[in-house]
Length: 78
Image: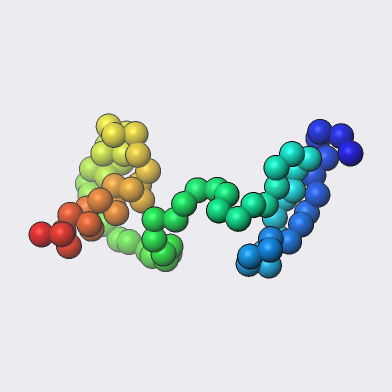
């Protein structure tokens, strides 16, 4: 098998399909650690509010999700 070939394998833990490269592979505990549960939501805000969020994203070089998560955490921590 060359370095450019990819195999598809099944993870031991969740039974989900994953890609196995010639080096490494699916390992228990590998990858980005979760910070919580992901739930998809739809949020309606004014153009001005979206502009404020986008400015925060650019100013702090963070994702929209992180800005909104920080706002919600700040609200509930006080």
